[in-house]
Image (tube, helix red, strand yellow):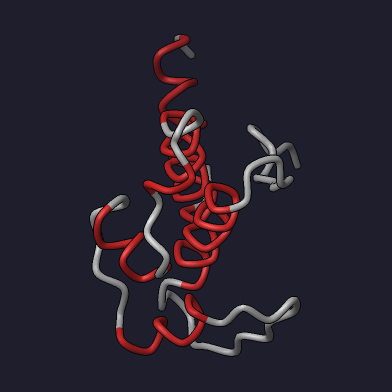
Length: 109
């Protein structure tokens, strides 16, 4: 198997949430030196203006919830991971020096 085919197969095997998380991680890397005052006060506005997507109405309460722990029970493929990573990104930019985590670069089974 050629190296190109191997890379393509590896990409296909990655789960969707990992690709979404990496996309948000890349956006975070490009926004590292952002002025805290430039970040909108509202996480929904942050999603609209900075990440350029419109959160579904049912995700808005989750994005605006400031609780330390949040339980979120939803159906499959409703944007939980993407919105969760957007919320982590928003909190990291609003609170400089805070620690956030992202999934590992590769998963081996």
